[in-house]
Image (tube, rainbow, N blue to C red; front, side):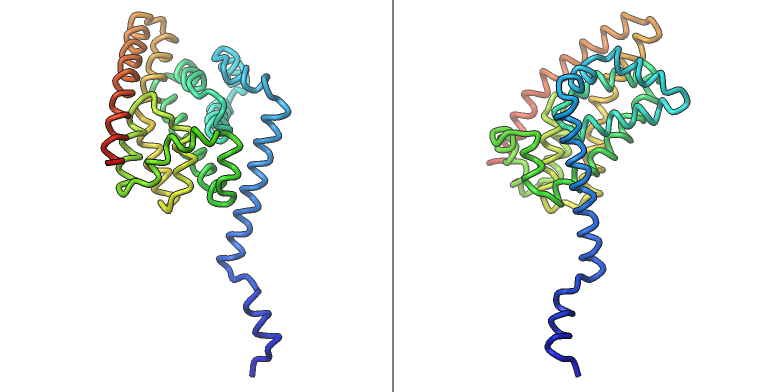
Length: 239
């Protein structure tokens, strides 16, 4: 016969899934605090580093055999610490490793970064989102979170160059979409923007400046067209 004390103990003892959630929350909190501490401690120096493609290339190249891992780590850091610019990192990847290897490194780093962000948001909620984004920025993509066809719309938005992918990655973590689906959508959706950056940098590293400039011109045209496409997708999703 179970006593009342035993029953209360059973009710309050966390099961296996509960313990896993607690461990995930603690790990996510540690990562969030580390990212915040790095941003506060390094401040402008961290921003300046990520904004300087030459500095990024020099640091990665100095890592020798671990250069691909270092490059991937920078991609992860840029996605988690969402205020950091990503374009110089992608250009550096293309310049150092070529278009295709650079693309693979960026996409793998992007996948890891997206999964880390999703874990952080699921553990800490809006608290971690507000570390990097204003209420206006979050409100600007709230239509996506509330869309009945969230996964399809998110995929289309990620495919469009120039859309606010950093805030979208964080907001996706607030939805009931499964973590692995968020990772897959974000990773595949990033392919066009990543390829254009690494391709242009890869041509530049080979001294093929005509092809590099042509790629950049095409990229700018896609970004311009993407702005109109983004507005159209948003309008259709909210009507």
